Length: 274
Ligand code: SF4
Image (tube, rainbow, N blue to C red; front, top):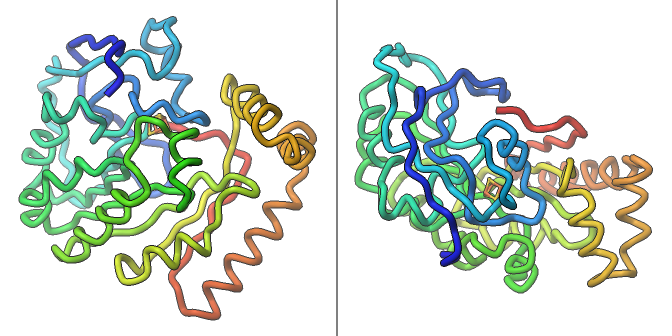
């Protein structure tokens, strides 16, 4: 973990919030901020709501307690962890907030979905085994660990993420690979499907969407490190040309249909919501 990370313990108004994400009724974000420092991070807008002016990725607020005593009936509801942080970021090792929340949710009757880029999720296998309706997704968009280090420096390596999928499968926990965000040119999704064969049988795909500070950051990276791709990225992200995504969607669906691979492609220009 980054040693200069600023960590603050805070008291939250509540852990569980209504969600506008498709398929989720509620969302839980036990932390504000995320030390994974993904170059394209969708959650940076949270700075506005948390009185931080430091660069995103350099601070984390830890919701050590909540003032809310209002019970929420979660029976039959879909609860998602997490939308604006990784609930298994390295601070979870010390604070165990996600673990404690899952212990409380165990018998709630809710369907729990976790999405992570961290191998720490395997620590909680003992709880997952006691949960009747839990699904765990691992986000990844490359099999090239050098590229992964450049764009997601704080997250788990490619091999560790594949190991997470494999271990979840071996322990009978429902899992899936979230192939996301697909970076034009870089994300070899066929290689990812091949690498995960036998570890999961469900794949979802999401395209790279760039908002606010992430747009100039990624375009600068492309210009400096991969200038031959500058035109492609400008077409997509400055001129809003969706041809690349239309053809990629077709190719993914044709490839997966031919092999009877369960695949859902969620490509859009909409901004993510909490
Ligand atoms: S894991 Fe998610 S919240 Fe964390 S930096 Fe990456 S994109 Fe942002």
